[in-house]
Image 1: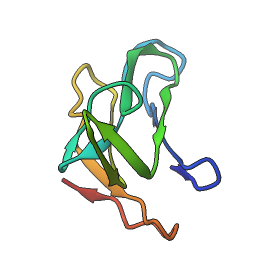
Image 2: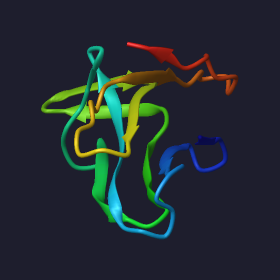
Image 3: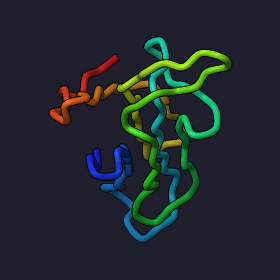
Image 4: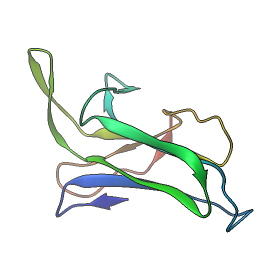
Length: 109
């Protein structure tokens, strides 16, 4: 989900089965850099553990400049994923935010 007023994206993974019983759930959200999920402070995160109903929310800045070493650049895409098992691919789905505010559709990477 995207909050245009706060310029953030957020992801939550909701369980369908075993509600009320702690089981493995993961929510992952990362800024995209060069078409890949980025790692580092402020670039994304993963919440994983045993939860009764959901994992998350995980938040990341939606659009704007990133500082990578000495370089400053604008990136507007995020990778997101979720799982109700122990494994998750942190770059399974990608979503690009438009600078105008009208978001492109999510697409599988």
